[in-house]
Amino acid sequence: MCSYRKQILLVATLGFLAACEESFGPTDTPTSLEPAAKQAPAAVYDYAFTGDIEGTLLNVSASPADPFKQLNSGGLDFEFVAASGDTTACNEKQPDLTPSVADWGGYALAPWDVQVDLSRRKRSAIHLQITGTQNDGAGSINLAVNDVPFADENNNGVTAVIEFQDARALVSALSYSDTLDSGGPDYDPDDRCVNFTITATKR
Image 1 (cartoon, rainbow, N blue to C red):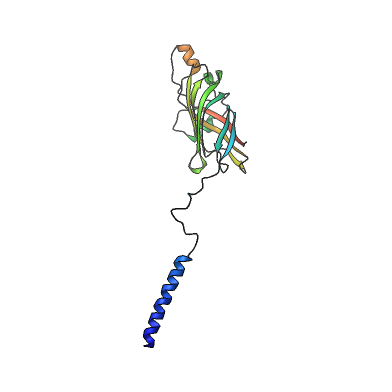
Image 2: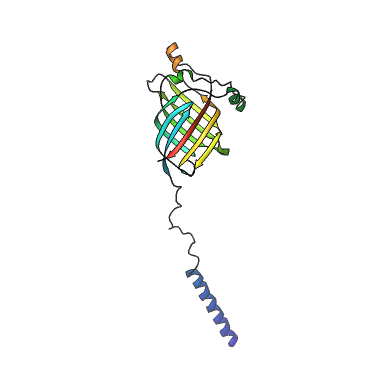
């Protein structure tokens, strides 16, 4: 009789403990009603291009952790000032391509209205693409740079800088000067060897 009562008492105790565990379990257990994970914070930056490529990019939203991780903006005025890179160094990076040149030629004659796409790839490599037309409508350009920056720094999200040295700018474009001389569009086969810096400054 006593053993039977002990069994009843044991079952009741276990049931009570199970109920307590369900009611007072860990409060940090995720549920479907919890809010979604917070997105990475963003800030507004101005971007300045200096060197062989010059231009400004204003009021662009980007992550302070890496303002160069993803950038896309259009309606910008750019100028291709010079091409001062060391062509030997450029060609050594991609020896399978045709030799590069250090001269913008007709591209430097007028400002360009362009679309800029920039993103950081694996192993810190940067992909930069500039597409657009000259402001007078006489020529177009599609330029791409894929290189690891020579310098890469981020000052606590306030300013960030990437510097390219002897970077190959692959060009698929219509030369402004050739268009004027021949009366029609001509393909430019030359890649440019350039040095330039991009600085992101938090507003």
